[in-house]
Length: 403
Image (cartoon, rainbow, N blue to C red; front, side):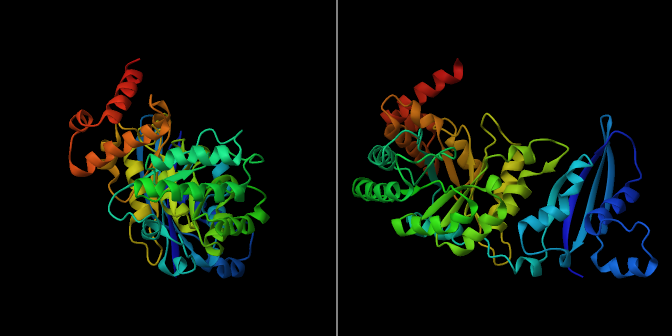
C-alpha cells in the first residue's frame, strides 16, 4: 500500500506509553476511531487506517518528547493541500502539544500535482540571468500614489538594478493606481530602465480580491504585461494558489503573511522546512518568501537552510522553487547570505535601500555592488574602497547598528 509518511514531535508534561499514544493518534487522524464498531466493520476499515512506522521517546528538561512517524494511506486524500492538512493535522492541532516535523510524499501521490509552472529555470529565462542570485525589492509605500507616481517609484528600483520589484503585501486599496493600469505603466518604465542598465526588471503586482475573481483578474494582469504575481498564500489558502498556478500563465510569489501562527511555537504547528519548503512548492509557488535567519523575526539558521534545500532538491517531476529569505538582508550581510544560500536564491531586500542618503536607487545599487563583490570573492571592505555608493550605505547601516 502507498503511504504519505508524516513525522510528529509530541511534547507532554507526564510520561506516557509512546507506542500506545502513537497508535491512538494514527487511528484518530485516519479513520476517527473504532468505538463500538463490530469486528467485521473494523476489518473493512483497515485499508484506511494510519500505520505507526516508528516511535522514539526521550526527555528534555522537565518535558517528555516522542517522535512518531505515521504512514497515511494515499486513498484517504484528495490531490489537494487542504486534504493533506485536514487529515494529518486537523483535529489533533487543538488536542495535543504536537508539531509536524516532516512529510514524505509517495511518488504516486505526487503524480497528481503540477507544482510550480515556471520554477527556478523558468524565472531565470524571463529575467535573462542564469548564474547569480536575484535581488527582489518592495515598493514602499504603495498606498496614496497615482498610477504615474507609482510607476515613477518603480522606475527608481529598476534603474538601481533590482531584478524583481513587488508590491507591498498590505497593499489592497489600489483605487488611485488600478491593477491593470499600474501594470502597463510599470512595464513601460521597465523597458526604459533596461535601455540604461541592460538588465530586465519585473514588476510583480499584489493579487487581491475575492477568491472567485482571482483567476480571471490574474489573466487580465498577464494581458496587461505582468509576468508574475504576489499572493498572500496562507490567508487565501493553498488551494487557490494551486488553481492559479495551474490555470494562469505566470509565476507566483508566495508571501509568508500570517504564517507565524503556523511555525513560531516549539510544540505546535508545522516546521518551516515542511510548511514553506514542501507544501508551498507542491501548491505551485515559484518563489517562496520566508523569514531569514538574520531579521527581527528570524527562524533557526538550520531551518532556513533546510527550507531552501527542500525547495530546490529533486522531487519527481515537480519544478524547484526559488527560496526567498527576507528580513534584514542588506549590504552589511549580503555576503553572509550568499555564502549561506548560494546562487539559486532570490534575496528579499527592503529596509536598507530606503536609508541610503542618495535615495532608493543608490540603496539598491549598493546591495548590487556588495553582492557582485561576493560573487567574485572580493571582501566587503575592499569593495567599499572602490564604490562610493556602497561606502555611504555601510556608513549609515553601521551607525544604526551601533546605536
